[in-house]
Length: 149
Image (cartoon, rainbow, N blue to C red; front, side, top):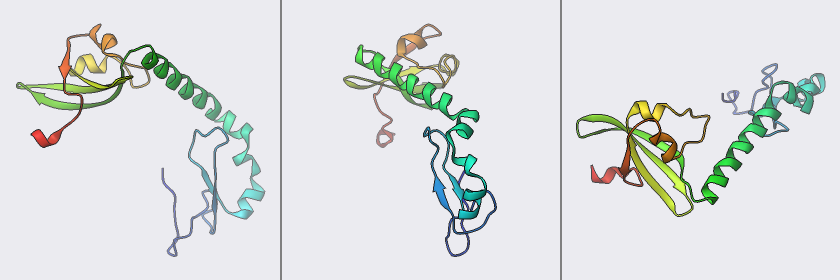
């Protein structure tokens, strides 16, 4: 979600709506910074505390995210390619997914059915080998070059 500003462009407090306000970052770097005016910051110091953000799940989510990123990097370091981007395209009269994967040597592309692509959640790491367990995966361009269309 975004921030609110008054007609003079001042940041509004997320608690009371007053101005001026400033942003206070999540101590775990997970959620969006809260905008607070001085009086709300004094009245509600808990909103910027580690305990508050820990209770909201920020620490756990941040740890999960960093563990996932490390697992992706470990796969790349081991010579694998991991999913980075995908786009639905019409190819040879069929709707397919054109997925891009990143590895040590750059990017590769793969075509697969939508059902095959949807078999792996966005919350999980996907490699071409993982997708091949669910359906046909074939070579595709390593970029989405629309200038050829």
